[in-house]
Length: 68
Image (cartoon, rainbow, N blue to C red; front, side, top):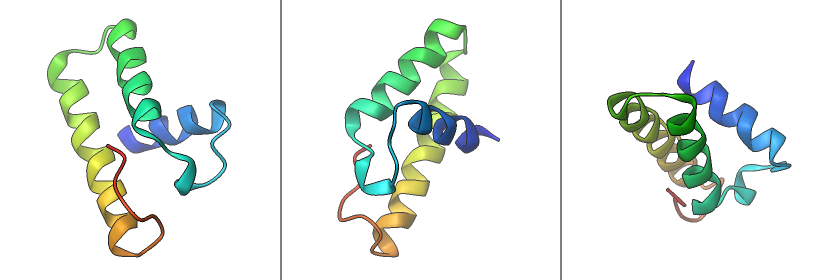
């Protein structure tokens, strides 16, 4: 699951709740994926999924704005 790996990355980065996710976390995660050898299309798909998830959290009023 593409989103699961982002969640794992956030946990490794000691982000304990959704409000703690920043633009920097998203960017660093995607850079890590790029260094690992993910293709640009895979990275774009991951970004789309992360944005969709964070937009959902905004709609549910869990977070105020989408850091991605």
